Length: 536
Image (cartoon, rainbow, N blue to C red; front, side, top):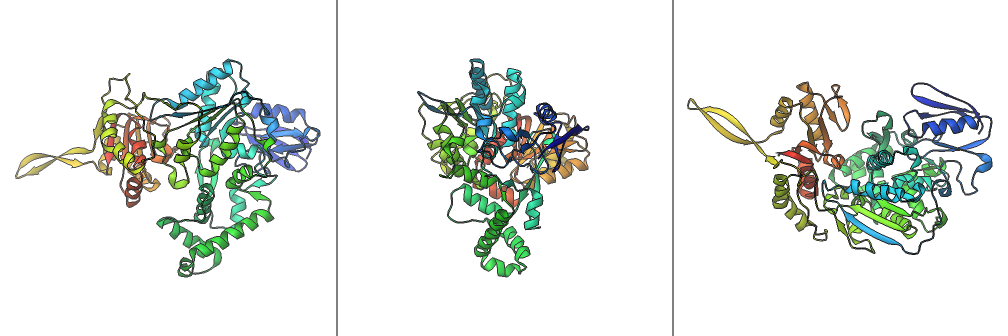
């Protein structure tokens, strides 16, 4: 295509081409460089690329003159690795080290400090790879290293998720990533969820497609499993969706659910092939395949894999390819906080990965006070040890720099009249009582967590009824600009902390998840800096 003109308004940079308009948000970190590059190429034939969940027919993230395109580049939809990273590095010694970061021990800070030290000692930024499980974690690390070194974020090419890296180096194989719109053409029953790429930045929100059958197959692929598996809820949801797709009653579907699931997925593959599409699983599957050129796997002087306990077996196969070409590899995580197992995570792979150096355990928490640490040791940790005997045995200590003793609250005082006399009773802390407490202390810092999104939503409804501004799954409720109150699922609360934290187990779904994986409780409880509230 040929660039014809470049314009912008208050929100977007628009690139006019002879094939139509493309755009990019002005809030994107590389927007200035992109604008300058596009202006310099007006009138020239170019190919363009997008990274991650971006439709290349709408968005621009990089542009390359046609006469400079690498012969290995795939249709302009992803960049050749040689364009992004320093490759073919020669190493005399390769090292692999594992770092365990219990709650609040400064794991990310440690990794940022190591990166900072390496770059200040002369390491080229293109030789640093920092990959996290989520976009939020990767973007947080990127923002922090950018601030520490006073270098623009756009100069760091190697900070992303493994999915994003897979796409950048050619995992899409010249095909276009599926968007919500494309999937709806296949099955109108496919829903969507909003996901923040960067906390507090509305322009970073992307829409992720969701579907019970596709989710089940994703789990199968990521766990390297031989068959698909549904839990009770997902089985019901899958039956309903398949009933819509095939035009059959639910009873017919449920009698042979797995066969219909296989047929559905086969149709999905055909749809992708006909329309030249790939999804997020495909890009990783393609990269780890034996046929994928090893020359496209980037070489890093310093390779960091953060939140490694949340990686799936499929992603670990990609990590193996990366570590084989890296000089110094650091795998960082905490198996006791491995709460993504239901989504295919393989924390055992993290614990068992071959290393060349002794493990480092960060042993001082700068968040958790002594009272809450004691509760963790006595009540929560024994259940984790009993259920997961393969876990890493590690010792860590409470915050030595705080005067807070840490309080655990699981009841409240209720005054009733009995025979004309006021009597004080201790009652278990309820959800309604917690909502009342938060309302009466809404100027304080609160983090409210539950295993399920539904319970989080009911707490939000209660606070909204009392006109208390707050954030729900990072969404602004009642103009929460100055509010310190946040409601999250436990899964999205990792990395967060608050003076007052509450763990709410209210529904059957909450109870099931809490009982099946005590690590959920461990993660939730260790978010508290001063006071922990337990609601059950």
